[in-house]
Image (cartoon, rainbow over all chains, first blue to last red; front, top):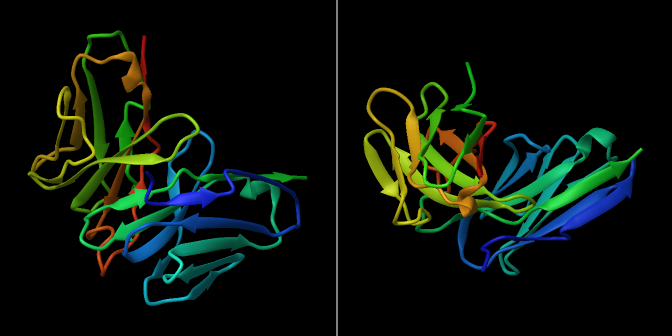
Length: 111
Length: 118
């Protein structure tokens, strides 16, 4: 099964609303990262949070990490139509030399 | 500083042919990762290479698939005798240091190579 699983699989909201996506994982991690993918394009890094951090902000993005629950959330505030994309969490697993990606959340922002 | 360059962007092959996908990492990056993505799905790790070395190929099928990252030139993902199930987008990513480790950074992705097997 997947190391990282996003919830929900798909999310559709109105422009201006906040969007929250969740990610759960199974094993101990060094860090957790969020990436964005526009349709037909490569992934773009959004934000990284280390295992000893609990919250991080970058512009309209807010990421939280709860290592006791093995979960993370990505909050996008004041959403815009241009935020429409798929969002993936990726975990840097302790002892492994790679990032493991989840299945992603497809976010649609309606004008 | 050019980003990660992948070519071809689109490749069509008939069953039984060979597919070669190329990836030039960002300048100064010595770590290269290949991922595969099926439609509407996440990325599945295939292989991690450093110059002239395969570090982790645990996600790559044992048969028909191979990868290299020579001292000079791009990284190559090679798929021999392609089958329809190989149809997917193949993404290359590079990093200046180990991704996922304690002193890690982000991965920089190319735009992908989309393989269609007829």
